[in-house]
Length: 547
Ligand SMILES: Cc1cc2nc3c(=O)[nH]c(=O)nc-3n(C[C@H](O)[C@H](O)[C@H](O)COP(=O)(O)OP(=O)(O)OC[C@H]3O[C@@H](n4cnc5c(N)ncnc54)[C@H](O)[C@@H]3O)c2cc1C
Image (cartoon, rainbow, N blue to C red; front, side):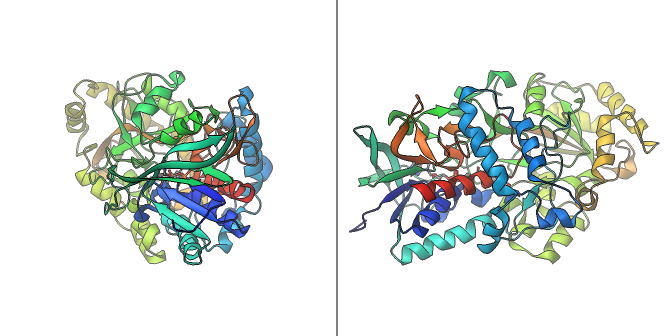
């Protein structure tokens, strides 16, 4: 690093780390930003993300006739978080401040940095139970133009600029193994310099050590991400309340999301809280074209696919596509390890989207023309069509008998009965003759189509699944896919790391997923979506303003 003597060291060059660096540099601090990966990975997970941001009472919402407010959002947040632990005091404060930010300055700050949003606001995580319970009352998921790459770009450009101006040093391939603590104060970091890598972004890189390093500074900010790429850790902290962790899970994050820094920070005296709170999805596919090991892709389902557990029982409300992630996960695990969507060609065309920047070429690299042709043109999006054709979890058949036969060939240890599946679908199809009915899923679809955005691009007109003119039939085997850590390093409202007894660990700060997106878990038990990138931006900003 030559003569550069940093005042602030940041561990992890993902979204939270870059945001913290930006804010600290604006205050005139000299910053050293370290990452175990190469320069090609600048931006971390956020690059791969869909770029969905939780914003409240935005112009995009208002244009669609959505009435939202900070009060409604905070009510939804509390109903979802269900804070019930003593250690939830700081996370709760973070959540309250974040909701104010999402309803206040967040959009104009990001707009000023160059971000723009797709005008149709998504309605993620609808909850589906009582008004005071989990879920978004209204659509709040704002997809950034450029998806995750559009969120990363303004900050990545700033990092390059600051580095050229000598205000920032970027230390890639620097893996931190230790926080240096003297007299109870964190004074710096030490670790390994890993050999240079040409591995493309997201691909596993070598862990061969070429030398070592040690740097000192007044403040060290940990922004090293969560544990979702480390299934041993996921299993260790898996919450029994959801059932047993499945034997087979796919990984929704690159393998550098390894959770190593959690243990390193704990050894230095940091308190970790809410490790048993996690956010994994039920709709995981094995990627037919993997980038990272065991690469899984999540389907972002519209509301119409019929959802069956591993025994072939259709799942009851609110365990419907797009409603209640962890409630559905628990319901699925009560019957087995995987679940099934059964749907029609009409549903896949209108409703299937995949999470991830690389799965949404139109929104990531295109403009209006590409989006309209991919979303409203014939067939599903090219990425979904590719999965339908090549994905190991997809089955397409002209009749139910063949479909179920092939489902059973894919999961011979958990066969489902053709007659049982047929009678449940037939009963559901019989509910379509009126504009009202008793089936909760069809009622929810009618509700969804009252929202312009859903009607336009997300929700197929209700139709009979077993009518061949709506076919062919499609079955998708769904695996549990690991993604986010809701718990992490316990921080106070300034982003300072706290010890297990609640004292400030002098010199140590944390932000982003490493800190449970703020405070050590500002989501509580459940997320409202778009709150992960938002939490990285918010907590990174605060840590950078204070460190
Ligand atoms: C496919 C996908 C889709 C997503 N979609 C959305 C979405 O639409 N909306 C949303 O809100 N969220 C979404 N997310 C989640 C969101 O992207 C992440 O939670 C967020 O980007 C985490 O950022 P971070 O900076 O905290 O950590 P990371 O991005 O994980 O960055 C941490 C960095 O720290 C480095 N590091 C770790 N340990 C060390 C060490 N010991 N030494 C040096 N470096 C280290 C890592 O190499 C990494 O580069 C998505 C995630 C994925 C993968």
